[in-house]
Each structure stands twice: as C-alpha cells, then as structure tokens.
Length: 401
Ligand code: ADP
Ligand code: ASP
Ligand code: MG
Image (cartoon, rainbow, N blue to C red; front, side, top):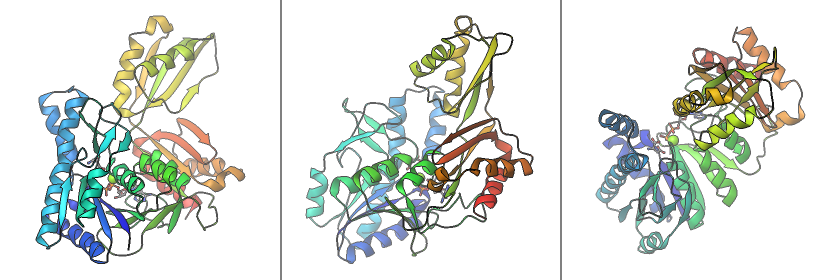
C-alpha cells in the first residue's frame, strides 16, 4: 500500500484496446490499495504526425506555437484513458500539465521542469481518485505551454514521483525491460535485472531511447525508486538504482544515436584563437557540440571537425559559412549520414584494452571510424549510418556475446 506513479508511452496507449489494457493495469494497482498517479504520452505516432502537420503549414514555425500544437497529443491520451477508467467503474480525473502544476523554464521545445505545485494533485488524491496527468508538458513564467523534449513524458513521471514522495515510479513501455542494447537491433541483447543510475544516464544520453535521459538524472538526484516494465506482459522488468548488486560488467550496454552530424571546418590557419572563434559562434546559436577533433597543423593550416545534433546542423553550417572570412577558413564540409555508436560500463575505467577490443570488432567488419571520444565509463565512435546496425551487433558480440 502506497503511492505509485505509472507512466505509459505512445505504443502502450495507441488504440482503444491498448487504452483498456492500461486502464486494467492502473485499476488493478488501485484495487490493491494504492494511490495511483498515471502519466501518459501521446498515442502511437501522434507527436510525429503533428510535427508533419506543422511542416505542411510553415517550414519554420515558432517554437512557442510548436509547443501549443505538440502538447495536444498528450491531452487526447489523458481524456481517453480517464474515460476508459470511468467505464471500468473507478473514480478518476485527468489533468493537463498546467493543471497538475508543472512549472518549467522558459525555453520552448526542450524546457526543464522547475517545480511542481502539487496542491491540486493532493486534493484529487485525498478524494481517492486515480489521477491521470499529461506527460511532456508544463507552463512557463509567461503562462505559455512548453514541452520537455522528445521522450519527455518519462521525466514528467519521475518529477511527479519525486514531488509526491512516491514509493515507486514504473515506466511501462513496449519492451519488457532495459537490455544491453536495443533488442530491436541487437538480437542477442540481454535483459538486465537492474542497472545503476550512472550507467543508465550514459546509455540514455548516448541514444538508448528507452528512458529520457533527464528522467534518469532526476531519479538519481531525488532517489526515486524506478523500474522499466512491459505494458503488454505482466512480468518483472528492470530496476534502475543507485548501486547494483551485480558485479560491475566491463560493458553494460551498447547504444546508438542517429541524431548526429559532423561539421568539418577545413583549411584554417594554424594559429591561436581559431577554436575559440568557432565554438563561440556555436554557443551563440545554442548549438550542442559533442565530439571535437583537431588535425595536426601542416603547411600552416589545420582542420577542426566536431559533431552537432542533426537537427542543428543547418544552423551550424549557416553560422560558419557567414564567418568564413573571419575564420580564414577554406570551406565547411557536412556529413549528415553518420551515427554515433557507444559502449557504456562502470567497469571500464579500471580495465585497459576496452577501446582496442571495440575497434577490433569494427575492423573485423570493415567499418571505418571517423571520430572517437572517451570518458571514464564510455567510448563512442562516429561511423557511417549504413554500418551502424552491423557495428552494434559486432561490438555487442565482442563484449557481451
Ligand atoms: P515509449 O513510447 O513507451 O516511451 P520508447 O519508444 O520511447 O517507448 O522506448 C522504448 C524503445 O526503446 C524500445 O521499443 C526499444 O526499441 C528502444 N530501446 C533502445 N535501447 C534500448 C535498451 N537498451 N533496452 C530496451 N529498449 C531499448
Ligand atoms: N509524445 C512525446 C514524444 O513523442 C513525449 C513522449 O513520448 O514521452 O516525444
Ligand atoms: Mg519514450
């Protein structure tokens, strides 16, 4: 008996049958004597469809209006799920992000949650109602709707669990837990019973979309008891926690990120201040720069290349091309057909040879590496996108088998 937050993703609520399936899970939890707060995402591909609809009207709409549009997907889901729960004969109320008290930072499209005013939530729970909350959205200080970034409903759920001091935050999805790699790409992927916050945070940040990275960050910060479970089969999932009992595996997982492009600034003078100018330009445009590579200067020129999110590459290119004279660069080259493939494992920091083994797996599959980056618990490589599935399988086989 306690307070449980349950979050259901798009595929879990994609049609009437799935909505009733979710209503059954929720009402069973309620019948067992728990208070239940439910967070839902937009049905199926609704968010993508809304983005496509916007593009038919305006190729460059304001972020504010995009958020007004995208937040509607979740509003459909909360009403439909509440209707299904009503039909099963249980007390229920749906709340939009604003009604549930979500206050976010101002930036549209990728806002962070600042706080939750939980008065309304508490009032509804006191009335013993099941509360169904729209994920992915809040209100900023201008009284405008904001969204939390793609996949952000996970973060809505964890934030609610933290605010309400929930006993458990369950993320229900279309796989039965967290695997050593996306089980849809790597057939030999192994389901984990548990994973540490730190490792999951790296995996999520490196492209494993099973959890929104900020949800993991928040669960770690507030010590939220979190698990990923299947909405389609009732069986144990994967617990995400501070410390895991399992021995530190050399490599806990493999992840892929396709939302990446490489920008190369060619023929720069080999003199101080060049990197400063390039990355100041990127920072001014709010572009997230990831892997950076600078060639050794030869004949007084050098090249600097770096990766940016695919959806920011056009902005990066325009900004650099407008400053070619100032940078004294020859040209800008873009590669937008690349993927970042990474391995993550807390055991890696005390084991030499991990990188060599990863590169060997790629070499054996004739896969060329464009860029490399490492940290204590991860190694990433940039490769051609067409090779990314082969690379994931090869690397997974080499470390996890
Ligand atoms: P939801 O709509 O429920 O939020 P998502 O599509 O966002 O679901 O996330 C679930 C998907 O994440 C799975 O269908 C799977 O393909 C993918 N995925 C990527 N990496 C992993 C991983 N390491 N373990 C499990 N699933 C993963
Ligand atoms: N509906 C949003 C998306 O598709 C949020 C989410 O699914 O978590 O990104
Ligand atoms: Mg998701």
